[in-house]
Image (cartoon, rainbow, N blue to C red):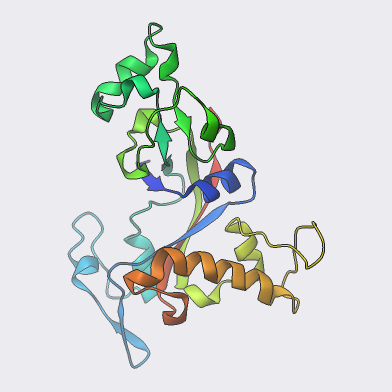
Length: 222
């Protein structure tokens, strides 16, 4: 069993906490090269020392073996935007662990931007980016329950819901769940908008239909 960090936006952290988000899609990098219904094995697959590529494998099997987000049973600890007391704004993350767990610094309690009440917390210091969150500051640990590889546009309406996406019927406050009914277009539009906001500038927009890892998970209870 291995443990890895994974970054989630505040919106997606909320969805995980509320039980709406149980899977995530991440771009395969670099993308495999397709040619005449087969594929050319990129160096990042066949040079992987601990799990060498078997040329009898198909593309999906090869990708799953190399997934950087782990295998079934592995753990993912969530990195998110965070903060501590404004009195500790000049203290780097590597030195904060002792201070935030020391009873002499009750204001050092960690705040998370995904929690709406933190926006008005008068004791909160500067927001620290998720990439700089150390393991000890993470409040969420996920257990990987399934891993697969597929093209992004193969996503179903049920998958979109499992990604934590919600949209509303016009003129109502009810959340929309449509399965694969015609209203699926509205649900998919919401997913495409979110996906492109994160990935289009990097060349992996929804229209390019990139290969992605699909990681399913559940919250690991302490």
